[in-house]
Amino acid sequence: MENRRGGHRTVGTMCHSMDSRPPAPPDPRPVAENAPVTLRSTDGSRLAAHVALPAGPPRGRMIVLPDVRGLHPYYRDLAVRFAEAGFATAAIDWFGRTTDDDERGADFVFQPHIAQVDPRDVAADVSVAMTHLAERGASGPAFTVGFCFGGSQSWRLSAGPVDLAGVIGFYGRPVLVRDVVPEMRRPSLLLIAGDDAVTPAREFERFTAELAAAEVPYEAHTYPGAPHSFFDRAYAQWGEACADAWRRILDFTDRHGATPPPA
Image (cartoon, rainbow, N blue to C red; front, side, top):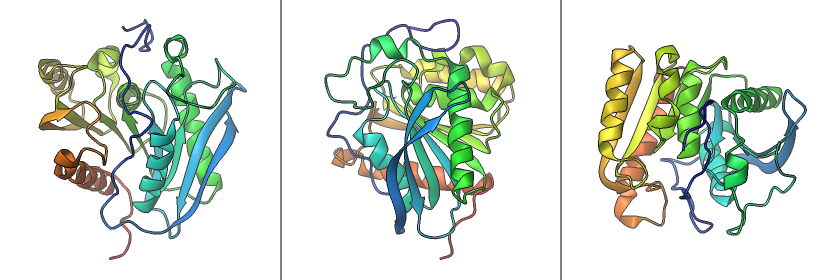
């Protein structure tokens, strides 16, 4: 359910399980660093993150926005995958303002915490993560990629104050973005599960029509039959969809300022 500032009051489903792991990018490159860090947001709040840096010059910066459970193992691993794709990457947590516990086990009760996530704080935390990567030597164009709740928050940043080259979201919820559609101006990529149990296809059809009417620079691709959370190497039947999603992400970021690694 939506609150007045684009957050959740309650969420009944989770995105990726504790056993989920993201698929590898095409032509993965060596990773120089891969470690958890603790940052401070602009209001002094603790910001847990997982940083992964490529061994060579980065093609850009990527901030990973997780699902409703926050920074659990799937997203720590995803930071490494984006570093393998050439991005200086930080996956960030949602919950430093409401809990001191950075563990996201299967028994983590996320509902009371996700209800308090404010999109204004998300924008601040993304900016802090971008600055941290710049301080580590990665000052190129920055992008966000989010999943489920994080996909919604990533799309919202198309309208926000953060200096992003583009925003990417997997199976986000249009209801959490609709209020900022008139202000969305940054390039946006929507990767949609065709059989999403959380958001029906007609809702995405309505959403893309609203984006087009508002002249938002967006691209959308639907994977017919794919379930919510299909971007998972455990789903062998969706391997080609995962590979295609990677290709679309890399093409989108390259067209919007990233520097592809040498062949």
